[in-house]
Length: 374
Ligand code: SF4
Image 1 (cartoon, protein in one colour):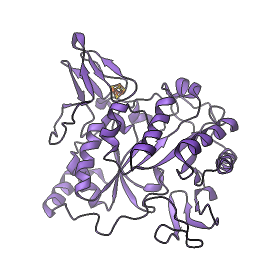
Image 2 (cartoon, helix red, strand yellow):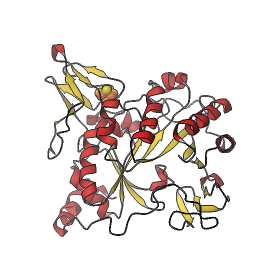
Image 3 (cartoon, helix red, strand yellow):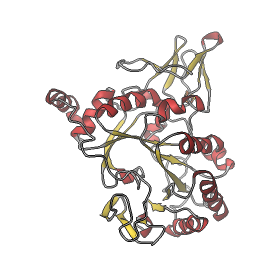
Image 4 (spheres, rainbow, N blue to C red):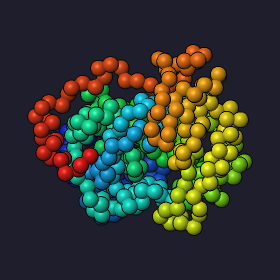
């Protein structure tokens, strides 16, 4: 494993870590389980790690293609700073090949095929503070593939008390896992299905590495994490598969990891499947609760399955409508009715966010990024 040497370099081309030279000018990228062996002048599967002159470069570094402010519930994270805004960003490219990708306009593009702005790590933090966001999310495309940019933003964010979130497909190599996740506060990992057939045919990847990432998160980090399963009619919504997925989570991660069943809409190469019927999500949620998971949600529909209920006394402790928090009754992270501690990260400590951005930095950011219209 190589030392990260990404701090302080803010201009392209940005040399990428997690690489090893090979014969004939090739470079082995071992950032994710694809282990691309990239020839001179070529890029890896993800498009944004490229071999130029026998060196590996990260083409997405400091060049986000999407910047937006979202509710944290949209990631989705229901047990992490509920009701707050999150500064959300993504680049071009992806290391999976999901036929149903809902952000395919950037994830299936090369770095030179998207409109992007130059935003160095320190400026990401300044923009988050300016926009009242206590958290920065690496999202929209797969953040693992721009892991060195993620790490540098995390360093800058930590200095200002800003939290960081990975919204990820979980497809990361063991060699890079701690380099990135040791700096992260929270994550939502897509568990896209619970069959190798689905992963192989519909995402062009494999299931087992994603399960291993979830186990590493549970056993080796303090990252707060939740899981999303997008349910696609006829492809991954069979009740026995849902039960097996929930049982695996219970057995390997415990009952308190929140699980989100979310609704699919036809997109990209998967337009022949209908939207997920709400009843599919209701049934999946009932199954996962029956299995013994404590916090199971329904997403992308209006549903009572968006609320957080106390698993002991069943009182609704957080009431939501889609991504909006309508009521939050938690008292110091506990159920107000029976006192049970509800797992999660419920509040930033007072004073967590420092007033690090100077008036000069604010003014410079306002001038440089005013056109972003955040
Ligand atoms: S991060 Fe990109 S280049 Fe590296 S192994 Fe994965 S897909 Fe290949």
